[in-house]
Image 1: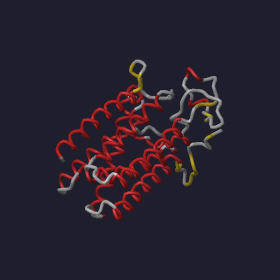
Image 2 (image 1 turned 135 degrees about the vertical axis):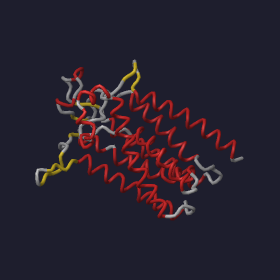
Image 3 (image 1 turned 45 degrees about the vertical axis):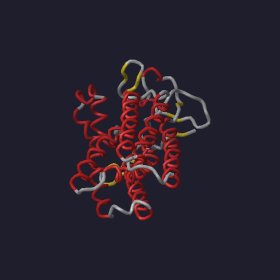
Length: 261
C-alpha cells in the first residue's frame, strides 16, 4: 500500500518546502545529466555550451507550457481562483504541455544557432523521459494522478479532501502515476536499444518514436484515471492530445524518411 506523507517536506522561516518542487528539481537535474552523458558518448556534434543553453530554454518554456496547458484545461476553476494560477507547488503541470513548450523553445533556439532541431530533439528525448520517470513521483506526494478504486497490494491511499465526489467513500485507488513512471522506464529502455542497434536511423526518429510510445502509454493510463481536469464526452483531454501527438509523430516520421533518403 502507498500512502503519501503529505505535500510539505519541511518548513523554515514560515516558508514551506514542498516535496513536489524537490522531485521536479531532481527530475530536471537527472534529465540534464542523462543528456550530458549521451552527448559525450553518441551525440558529439553538439557542444556542451549549446546543451546548457538549450536545456535552460527548454526547461523554462516547458514549465510555462506545462502550466498553461493545465490552466486552460481547468479554466473554469482558474477563472474563479486566478491567484492559484501561479501555485505550481500544489501540482497541476502537464507533461503534454511541457513537450509543446519545450519543442517550441527548441525550434527557436536551434534555428537561431544554426543547429539541427531533429538531432538535438533525439538527444534531449533521453533527458525528457528520464525526467518523467522521476517527476511522476511528485504526484504521489500531492495525492494526485490516481485511478479507479482498487484493493491491490500496491493500492494508493487518497485523503478525503483529494477524492472526487463520486468516489468519496473509497479509500484506495490505482496509483496511475506509478504506472506511468514504470511505462516510462520501458520506453527509455526501448529508446536506448534503438540508439545502440539501429545505426541507420534518421535524425528525429528517436524523438518521434518517443512521442508515439509515450502517447500510447498515456492513453492506456488515462483509461483508469478519474482525476483528469477536463473530459470531452467519455474522453479525457489527455486522450485527445495523445491521439493528436501520435498522428503528428507518425506523419513527421514518414516525412523525415522520405526527405532523407
